[in-house]
Image (cartoon, rainbow, N blue to C red):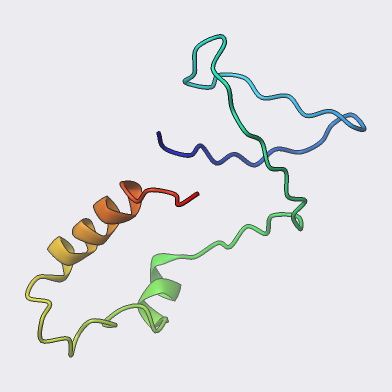
Length: 85
């Protein structure tokens, strides 16, 4: 089963509410709550992206023939990765 990652804000001391999970009543789950810093929105524009070091990162990789196909493959692999227990 795949992990579900959510970010929530505690609106009342000692309580967190989670609704709309794709799980059936009676399903056992494990919750791990990790306090995080306030999420900072990074307004990355297309212009900023083009000026970043990310564009062209695979340019000299000979084993990568098609960067779009390679990126798609990496996304699929990361989505199907199993969590080790």
